[in-house]
Image 1 (cartoon, one colour):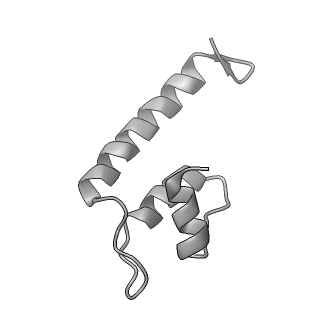
Image 2: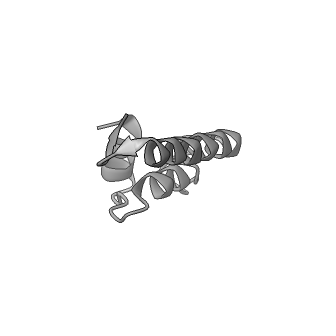
Length: 70
């Protein structure tokens, strides 16, 4: 479990659970929650991670065989 997962579960008490888990977790970590916690990642970091996430998704699906990367 990553530190972002722990923050979402322990501090925010609302970990994302649907098919867009990774995108929602990153979005959640970029938000400041008043009287609870500051943003865990900056907006610039969110943008970079989303770019990386999209690239990785494309590569994994383009070069996979039976769901396993070749």
